[in-house]
Amino acid sequence: MSKYLIDILLVIFGYISGSFPPAYITVKLFNGKDIREIGSGNVGAMNVLRNVDLILGVITGILDLTKGFIPVYLAIKYSSNIWISLLVAVASVVGHNWSIFLKLTGGKGAATTVGALLALSLSPDFDPLVLVPSLIGLILTFIFFKDFYIAAVVSYITGPFSFLFIRKSLLEAILFSILAFIVIYKLRFDLKRSFEKIRGNIKST
Image (cartoon, rainbow, N blue to C red; front, side, top):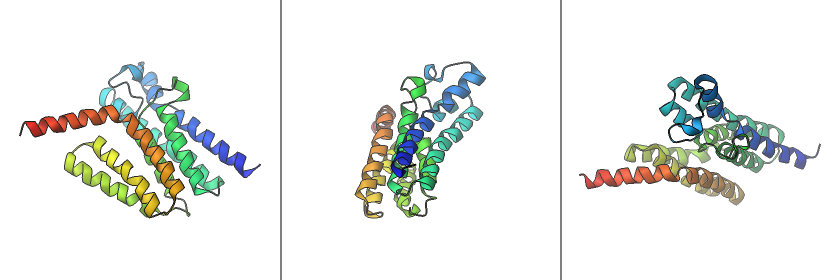
């Protein structure tokens, strides 16, 4: 089989894997409800955890992480190009956010991204240190603002620069930028609420 065909199949599998909707399935099976009609309507672990059940939320989070990890791990194993692994990561997050099984509805992609990056860090051709600036940005921003969404956005924005200056790869930086844009776009309403809350706290002091 041609290596190009393998790469294409890996990307397609990344999207299909990402499209698998644990939040929808677990809530439907154990609660009999449609997660899209509960809370924020988001098909992700956070909505399940906040508005349905703690244990189901944790299970959903693990499955969301796994469906990003597996396709990227397979890409590392069967493709010779590290950028294909990044492209598969993008495809899995796109699948999570716009699932083919749920009429292109979905979640926000944070857990799936984490799973994909965990797999990527296992590649012998990849330097895990490239993820350190994003991790530092996430932690410091969360400590300062006490808000996960703002911290996540800072982490995603930092990522492309890490790939550009540490990995010295414009292509990888572009692919991570696409990944960051996809997640940040999905977080836009959460970010708006976070900043409004911060403004409100500033005015009240």
